[in-house]
Length: 179
Image (tube, rainbow, N blue to C red; front, top):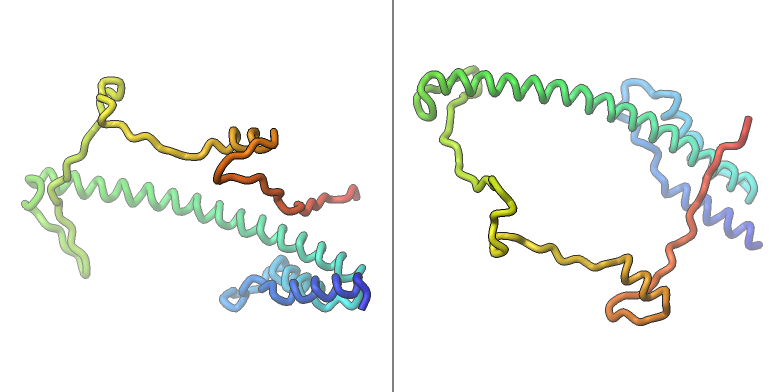
């Protein structure tokens, strides 16, 4: 087996282990869903080195497109959630004010089919009114490594106990060709 054959075999095996997005719960497959599934299958069904490499790239591009589509769906869902969350907060505050107007905690209870609402006495908390006036005893200090200083020291070939310079793995760069 040549080195190219081994690389192609390893690439096919890697793509066999990549799970396409689960489409079982979907009412209808989108073009992006089908493209991702087909691209991943194409990568692990490639017969030679060149086909394996180009199909792997095609699968990555299809996955990137699907990821962008999913991100757009998440953004839309987050926008809807923000609207519902704001409405819920306003509704809760309106009921809280109504119960408070009835006489405060312990005076009134509201019931519906399976729920009830009432006011509970609020807890106490420390509110900082002037940070500059606080004595040092009441401050926390976070201890963390100075990574920039450690990296600079190690780059100068000076030892730093408990630290070492490590090389990150090579990064895959994918660019679009001009069409």
